Length: 340
Ligand code: CUA
Image (tube, helix red, strand yellow):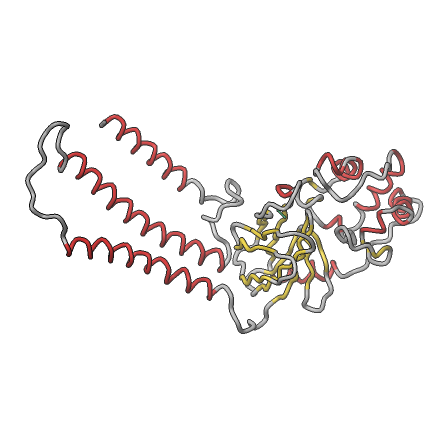
């Protein structure tokens, strides 16, 4: 009995040690809710710790009661129990009804308060409005501050400025989740859900669709780059410029022709060149660190592979292989990688 108890206590201690390891430094745990970097994520973290403290209190009461019952107030098999005339104890019954009810109240009050706090009714001064469109299986971001900037899968936001995300879906239910900045909030067709947050520390934060949405749900990743305000202003300005025109007689210039004559134009926009809207806007593709919704690094090798075998790299991807190969493909990749 004691050996089993010891084994369980050891398992509990190991679990606690693992749990404390979930927070900590930035690079080791890039998707931990235990290392919040925005007001929204910090509030949720605070509530989590508060509820966990109540849970620990309940756990210790149960463990103490269990130990007392097993080792001190128990009788052996075949041994007669102590005589008692009491069939019920009113005070005790009131206590164990009221106790849990109070604990539930202590948990629900801060929870409900936080739900209202994260959904402000009045607009916030200096807020940056951004529409987030979820697609199978990628993310589109429209800056609604009048700049007209559009990007995909990599959202840039300024630090220390209120951000207002309006979440809409183009097809099925998705869920927007950046563990260290906040979420997770469902993105539902025909409905606008909202997230308000202020990110505090510049850096790169990983996001992931958190609602099963089909073949490549797990490949529906994204990143949020929290920039210093000046760096953000520069980035946003660059994003509103038309697509770069490659110098004549270069592979990129030949690639621009390949693009213009390809079916790619039906689905992708390159400002000044094409007006497709099914896939991500490619006007500034080369300014992004990843392609295919955060699945592959954005470099010529991966982009080549992606254009050749989209369905292998991302099952169910809407982009077909158009059979572009050889010099044509190399030129196209050179052009796309020139779109800073
Ligand atoms: Cu979108 Cu899962």
